[in-house]
Image (cartoon, rainbow, N blue to C red):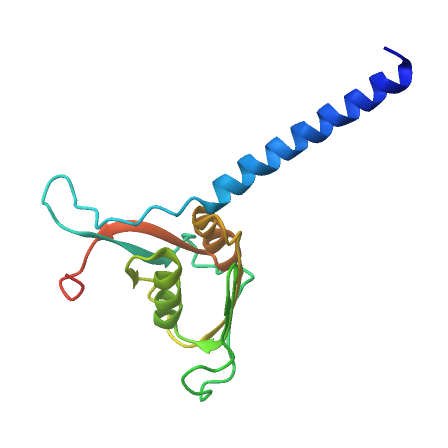
Length: 154
């Protein structure tokens, strides 16, 4: 085999490897996300929900959750909701929980204890719902954790 043919064969095998890798990535991306199940507490048989709580003990919020000066903005004041992006102006944390619930396909309960309205900027990898948990922690200073469902949610 001449040198030219050897180089061409190496390029073709590299291209074939690249195509195989793309097929694997494509197949993984098309796999549907598992449907969340209502988790029950092992001891009491109580249903579990995701609770949104303040992540830091000192109560400091992240750079993506800023108290808003505007309070009379209306029902859907400046809400941009796209895959991997959530931007909201002058919303209460209960509304943030509602939008997180839609992305996670499970109930999210507001247990932050925060009063007032906030401007929210949150981004994550849209094809991996698990990236939403660290994004909420790092960008908003809040945490999502499984807790017992309050009586009003059951």
